[in-house]
Length: 59
Picture 1 (spheres, one colour):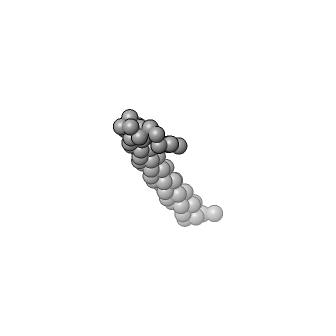
Picture 2: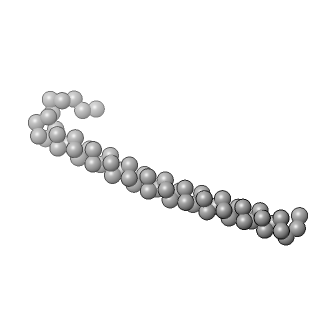
Picture 3: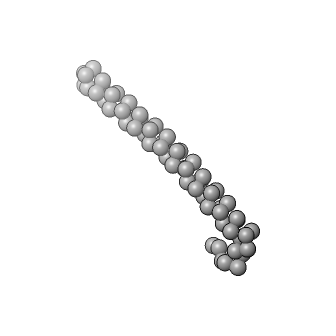
């Protein structure tokens, strides 16, 4: 194995590491977005219940 082969392997690993980091960042953004949606829906359900919609069953 010569230096060119090692450079190609290193470059490939670096690219894969970058891709994994970007994927992790996207997953974190997605999780924050989903958390916000869940909180918003929970607030809406709470508002509906407090407005007299408590006779409706909410799961």
